[in-house]
Image 1 (cartoon, one colour):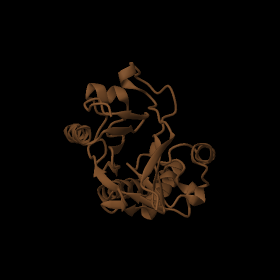
Image 2 (cartoon, rainbow, N blue to C red):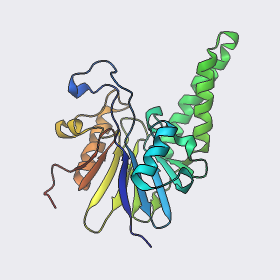
Image 3 (cartoon, rainbow, N blue to C red):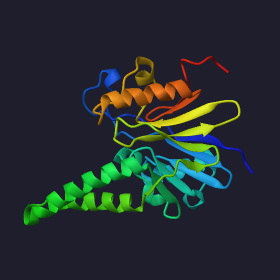
Length: 232
């Protein structure tokens, strides 16, 4: 049995990076996509690129086809983290229970409001919301341990149920952060991504990850060595 390993499939980016002085979107934002393999499980975290692009990137970076992915894990339900999720029809889709419940309530209320408008309802909005509801319904509430050496690492704040993954290796510990720690600039300056559902909670989540991890997979950036830890 293979021990747990991981690799970056696609490095993400922010549509607008406030710590670069950007105030309006200047690019298409997408989350960092990470591949985690443990035993017979092949887990793709945040399938954020458009489907055709992500399929090509999977082949380039890991020699994998979409049907070989056994699990998809979303660090949040933000659209920029799940553009290609329907590419993985044979996989099990996971999201944290807290995120699933919070998003589900909000989506149901928005959809009910739009439908209530009747003929005045925006059909495109109703269709988009209906698609989101269908995706969320298929997403299961993730267990505390997703696979051997792969545990959930709750990081609420940026969204109510944002959740990373704690990857255990004999020599080092890695946290896949999602938008809880988006970029190296946010990490170095101790800044959380805004707007956030709860800024104080988001700061606490960032601090906990920094305390625990040797390596950090940032939500819109690359994997980095924890700047507070000694090199290894």
